Image 1 (cartoon, rainbow, N blue to C red):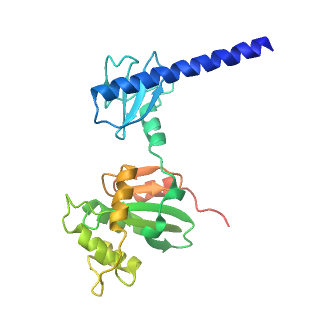
Image 2 (image 1 turned 180 degrees about the vertical axis):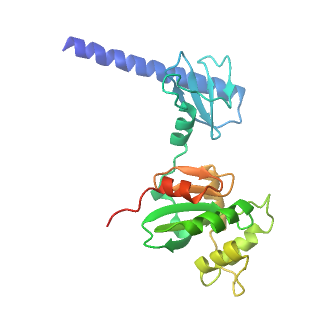
Length: 239
């Protein structure tokens, strides 16, 4: 009984010490770089090295902030695993069920059993490439497209997004534009979710298009081949 109590106390002290070290490090970093937003600090299993997740990237330092490792990769020499890549994948996962899919354009292919979200800019050439060469090849998937115009790059993209959203048939209007370059002729003004989607993208840290989000929360940036997208989505669920 005494032994178990001592072990529990020791574990509590170690956890409190680790928390104190991380809190102290967070305070030190914020005092040095007051504009950065620190999302998490985690001690790694490697000789006092700390992982700091901030502004969507991982950096490494020690508990006293004596050095910074920026844009480096932490690799386990035994397993050859890229630990940085694994952690970024984990830290940037999205809760798919929390996405406001009613604010996206819905296109169903086949039985639509698999789910895929795409943040897309109507004037993004890579978005067009993705749609025309790869997404058209997918089957048995429901694709939810959030119109996400990057106006700093494409000044007219927001106007196109609203015209597509306000068309009588959003799905057809999107397909006509992204596949054939034809904007809807009978589109009228309406309440569009473009501004809400912009806020959502900022919240999720989405800075480029296309960005793909899978039902397991993983994301891919850029126009990936259909085979890679199929692999990420997994097999069609059995009935």
